[in-house]
Length: 225
Image 1: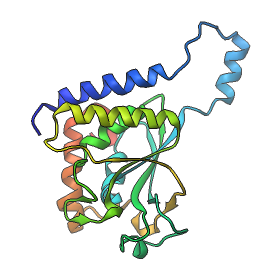
Image 2 (image 1 turned 60 degrees about the vertical axis):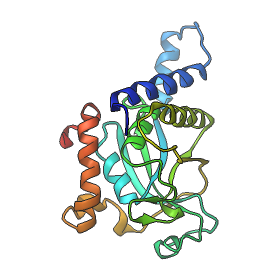
Image 3 (image 1 turned 120 degrees about the vertical axis):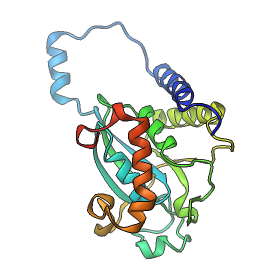
């Protein structure tokens, strides 16, 4: 890494937020009081879903469980070509699936662009089909988009990351439209929190969490600061 993290974050925000803003149709029409009340009663759009792959899903889950505004995290599989894959099948690397974490988040607390900011910095997006010693297409760095807006923001985030100089090598993170998502087996859920002293958790996941705590202190849930 050659430039400061702060330089990258500023660039990422400026690009991704600007693009997101341009995608919205501006209007000066004001809601009446009744319309406003109806909107508040019926609007559920403050909750959205993001699906991200950054190597082993235990790592991604543990990182985003600690981010303010993230309501739930499920480890699972997506992007493949067979139905209801098992972990054993995923590990062969032949199903096309990626290990991912699917997040439900509150858009009034944290934006999609901010989630991608944490995502990109918390792993190495320049490693092709691997993260460290976890090797295979199932460990690819990937953003699975749920809408055209997410697609545009993801493209802007990758472009900003590539031009930031934060990494020496080119970003290889894929942007793929979300397909079927399969929740992983029960023993994969909440893995780090349930097994903090397990070897992989101690030597691989814990350092990632510490990095996120250092760089994104203002985005952490109170219990994890």
